[in-house]
Figure 1 (cartoon, rainbow, N blue to C red):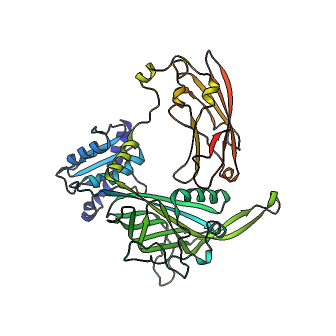
Figure 2 (figure 1 turned 135 degrees about the horizontal axis):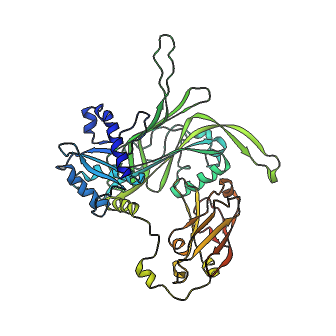
Figure 3 (figure 1 turned 45 degrees about the vertical axis):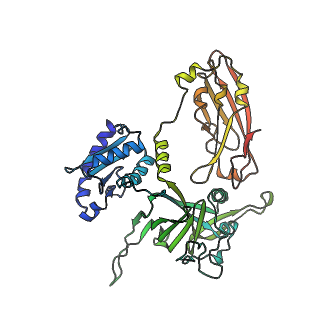
Amino acid sequence: MRKLSVFIFALICSLPLWSQLNANEIESALICPKDDQGSDLGYCQYTVQNLNRAQALISKVNQALFNGRPISSSDGILQPFGENEQQLLFWHNNPAILDKMKTIIPLLDTLENFTTYSIVEVRTDIYEVSESGLSSLGAEISNLKFGSLFGSDDDNGYGVTGNNNGLGVDLKIGTLELQGLISAEKSKGTLNRKGTIIRTVPNLSNLNYKDTTPIYFAPGAGTNVLQPETGIKLNGKVSINQYNNSLVNIKDYSLYYGTLTDGGFVNSVEIPFSNLILEEGVSFPIVSSKTIGTMKVKKRGLFGFGNSESIEDSKLLVYTSVKIYSFDEYINSIRALAQEPKLSFTKEEKENLDTNCVNDLDVLNDLKLIAKRDQLGDPVLSFMFDKDYACKDNFKRRVKITITGEDINKQMNTTVTTFERLMHIPLRIKEIAPRSFTQPSLTFKVKLETYGRLRSKVTLYLEFAPSVYDIEDMFWIK
């Protein structure tokens, strides 16, 4: 109820903002108000376009996302608004679900004539990279310029013009491999992430994103007030190739990036493409021809001798990729997101547990190891107990897990939990320094201590060999 009261208070406070919107903006269907500082207020209004009333759309949303049940007041709100019941108010305390609702609600307000592939997730990763960083990514700085896409009238064009070499296909890379390379460059200090934009839009819809701040400069004599912007703007129109559902064209693609320099002026880069053609699973690179700043790069000598530090010019490196969903796939992904994680055995599972238990060392020696990359491309290492070792006498036992080694924080990696929870939720190794992933291998010591009538203390060593590409098979019990 407290969250609902806060929401109603925010709604009342924001009504003047809505009154300032003109009729055309109301007719644009989806509005997510912001406060005076430009921050999202956390909820949205949608004006129904095709269905008879908002309640019909609410029924569709509940059926598609929440198993036909209304959202509980503790999770969010989805209700009609306005005398004619043609407007819909919604919010959710899970930002990821709220973001998905912004896409799916307009999509459900149709006659349900979906094509086989209807949803496109466009991901844009923006980096500042030094000259040496670009070289290690396989590109000479002098040959990198953007231009208009080859084959603007042909969906088979992948190169870009700019000079004789252009951007070329040498920097195109599989999305998974790119994550590994970016992670490696970040650990070497030659690359900094400046932003990641993930937008999910229906096919044939506009891709719009804006997160900018105007900077005001006093005018000179006889000139107007200068108002450059810092931040990121992204625009374009997304369409899936009707003959090849793995290809997506973003028409009139435009990226703006502006940053405030130490000298007090805005250094900006604008990158346009009349047609940017993307293939699912492949990240497409764009490198600015303009220098956006400088980076301090440290270089290591052999055995620590000859270490040096240099200042290098930096450019903007943008990688864009797409993921294509069928309507059913997208709905299922939202349903999975909205489901509560399973934290324990069911009553029936507990009744069927074995009465014979293995010792704690056997449980520890057969951990289920998990190595993957997060959305930013950084390695994530975790482990969990195997459910097959659960028995009536051990699943409720409390256990203390302590992980040490490789300069990680021991306090951050000390956890008191239960066998049952560790059999359902992986335990992550936290605070691994990025520089550690440049080593040939990492070793971690895992100590398990149990409490209660039967006490034990056992240890195990884990080893991880960082890989530039796939890391799933690079984590094992030593």
